[in-house]
Structures are given as C-alpha cells and as structure tokens.
Amino acid sequence: MDALSGLTKQQLCDAIADTVGVTRNVLGPGSKEHVRFLRDVAHKLGLDSRGRKHELAQRIVKKVGQPWDDECHSAGETVTALALSRILVGLGRSKEYVDAGYKAAVEQLITQGPPSELPVGSASPTRLPVKRYSFYRDPHVAACVLAYARGRCEACLREAIFNRPNGTPYLEVHHVTPLANGGPDTVENTVALCPNCHRRAHHSIDAVLFSKQLATVVSTRTWP
Image (tube, rainbow, N blue to C red; front, side, top):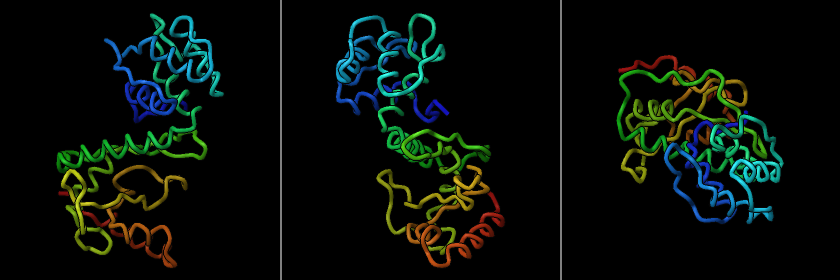
C-alpha cells in the first residue's frame, strides 16, 4: 500500500523536511505545498531544483526509488499525499513517523475517556512498505481499550505504576492474534497490559498459554 494513512500532508511534509534536513513549511490554503519546500528537498538530494512543483516532486520520487504516476499530482500541479508518502517511504523513515503519529493520536484520544460507541477498527489493517513491514493501527481502537481498562492491567489486574506525560495511566495495547498473523485491529483482538505482561505475551516461555488466557479476557469483557 502506497499511502501512509495515519499521516496528514502537513505531517508528511514535516517528516520529509526533518529527514533530509530542510526547513519545515506550513502548507498553504487547500493543503497545498510550497514550491520552495520541494526545491529545498530536491537541492538536498542533489537534484535540479528548477521547474514547477509536479516536476520537482517527480524528480524527488524517482530519486528515492519510488514510482511516479498520475495519482501523484492533482489539478493546479498540487502534489498529493500519495506522492509525499512515497518520498517518505523511499527515504527509509516511514515506520518511525507512522509510529510517532499513531502514539500521538492515542495520547490525545485517551484523554477524552471511553467513547460512546465502540470503534469499528479494521479487519485488514493497511500494510506499509518499509525496510520491514509494519501496519497502520487505528488509534481509536487503542484509546478505547485503554480507557476501558481504567489504568488496570487486564492480565495481572495490577494498577499501572506510572502515568503518561498527559497524566493517564501507562498501559500498552497488545493484539492477542498478531497483525502479522492476520489478526484484526479491533477492540475484540486487543487488550491493555502492563509492560511486564506485554513482554510476557511476546517473549515468555508460556507465551502460547498466556495468549489463550488473554483471548479469554477479551471474550468475557462487559462493555459499560
């Protein structure tokens, strides 16, 4: 999948700017990138920095080994989020920014408390092409499960021993059936764990048995 669904055009531009070491630029009206931003990126990559926006973007996309097609630009020579995501993928930094965007979204959502309705999530999470594959995870799903747990690990039932910077209890979201094994990114497949239990789920000698216990925890939840 080409697009990094969790990032806006502004976030993509900021990520590219930070990666190649150029000044960030605030997008113009209609989420339009500035030509000077593309010129700066092209220059940093040793490319000809002359020309119109879609010409500059095309050079950059191809420079980082990604495909350029009609979906990479729209009317008025505006470069699309698809083109920007391909640049970021080509620069080899997409996973770091996807994870950062996901965590920031979860941090914001959990301060709002439990949602009135359970998020739908995704039965087939978008797979992102990076040096190794990662998945886009729905922050609403994570925030919902964390809010439901109310600061208590759903495995050992102990309260979180410290808080996040935003003041909410620190627990980690674990997928009972891993996404890499075809598991869905839904509340029915996620559980809030303390760091110790999360590591146990992944690395302990009884990980398989523990996973079965977590599946029972999830299946017997009673949502408020």
